[in-house]
Image 1 (cartoon, rainbow, N blue to C red):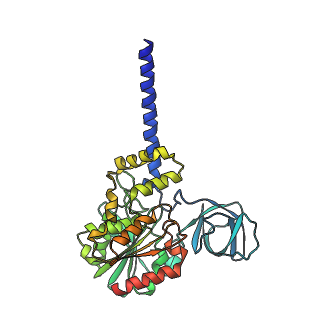
Image 2: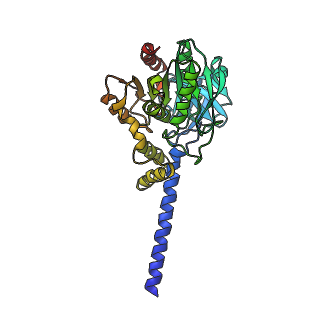
Image 3: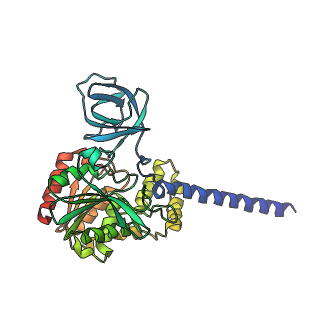
Length: 375
């Protein structure tokens, strides 16, 4: 009986180990498939507040806190906006001092844990920017999709769509610029967002199914006066824009695409987020397989958006080599395939979804040049 018992024990051990590996793969895949809107991605470090003074804040010294540009600074119940480094201000070697532009809500106390976020604004277009807007409801595949509409004089509308870990507050970074240039702006929430329908499986499909909500927004815009639309998407929102341009029945109304930190290879993004959760390298293939099984993504199916062969409209990409979530290399290849249609604006030292934050003036000037022929 001893060999039989030994065999049974070995089988049981293998079964338990296999089940544990599957569970670990599911947990690792959650980093991308269950990224909570409005919370930091696992690639974003927590920083400690060491002190504040008039117009300045002292933070833990880290590659993140050394980034150039303007960022939101978020914590539990707190939001502020920080600007450039103040190197001339005396500070300990393990800290940095940045310009503190404003505290939107909450307080910042020594010892607080915070993180940098691309969201420079919170609230809605009126409370954050002083812009008149309407709260509208877009009929979507799964139900009503809440959106903000900021009116403008032109018949070319800009439809904005956020990405991983963000909400429709994120596109407010460029909303004032677009309003100044008289573009109507439709800022869309989609399935899984607060106030929008929840997908049946409760998971993000990294743009594979969500693009149909963007398609609904295009139909809404054309129904209410848009002669053409420009899609401006961040992260997986950029993926959605590419898929809409390829598959929407009303894609002839799309005049151009603006892609910020586009996710062009979902497996790389999933691996990056799982690794940031300290998933052992040996388990990363299981995370990819778990994501495939849970969402129906087959191979790099979402990556078909990265094939530029069928493009007929101009595309502007903002992306840089310091993006730890969506590799910049795929944007570089994408632009190289269609140099006559695709312009790549390389942004150094900017994390995922924060290409505007690194240099708002340069970003908006590139955007102005791109949009001018499409007005």
